[in-house]
Length: 472
Image (cartoon, rainbow, N blue to C red):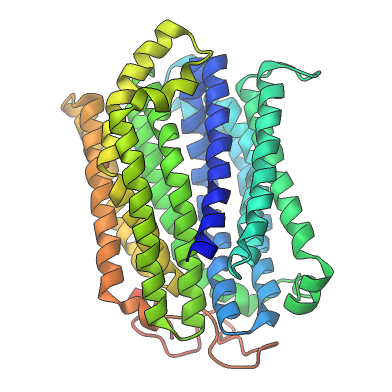
């Protein structure tokens, strides 16, 4: 587990570092830029989250093909995920002219709205690279070659940090572009990541063993299988990110100070959440590989071990949130306006206690949700999010609009929501339906197995009840 998980933790920590520094620079530049950055970036991710989740589900295909010793199918599977990003590109670009009306409807202050539109519009140019990278990275994570992911994601983070400094503040010939500079720095970093993954995947050894060049084509049966299993995964991200985005936008109606403090609290929490996401990817990969080998008991052991590490890590972070919040927030206030930051930090310190309260359940949510998705139990995950997303948005909206519950009441709602979500996925994992699930074909040869699909793109193998999405 550690061989797979630790490099992924390092890799996702590079994302944490990237966003940490990005938000810190924006706070130094203009607190309103920080207030605008998270809603705009979440809205951008909401638009591409379905395609990102669909393309990223290639990881499960790669893991199960690898576990089943069928390398000839891996390159073809990865390219189906890349096609997802290319097909979605017109939608990403179409959202740019719609941005002003979209953010005007939210009701934030005029200055924050302007910054949100600018940041969202620029990020849209990087969406295709982000989605394609999710599939390309799966070529390495699904096979357990995770140190490559560490190197590529570190290069991406460094690119973003350097360009952030130059482009936000105006150094080395760059214009001082503020939040626009932060957006273009992120877009460049996304495309650098995609290019590096593509170059490494197309090395001669990979072309020969995994058909990474020969597989560069649209394969209707395999794409249909990816749609069948990956669509619920993509929809889960749409619902989860959408609910979180709506929560943030509703908090923004309380005022600029409340929105900035909430943004800062969630940015601080990325120190905990992103590394746990690495553990989640590890759980999904290990479950996929072990099920490809028909060893479900070892898949379960891997998952419980992963959760134990995640719980220990999140418990440590929660302790820091409660005992030394000023240390965690110190870097943000270094070059910020002292009086304004004092108000923001005081409110953020209180919100960090909520983060500590649901830290363990956050780890539970990530690890066990990814574990059952690594088996193919994506329809249960989708059904859960269909029921859970309104349980965050509606109580928050009603409380703010009709009962003046304010910021603290909103954070009580999201704390209870995260705890319930983690408990549901834990219960599903213990129940064990995932042990009999597979996403890959169960017939054919290693190089060109039967697709397992009929012309319509639906599974031709015997399904367990379709509502569960289990296919043996």
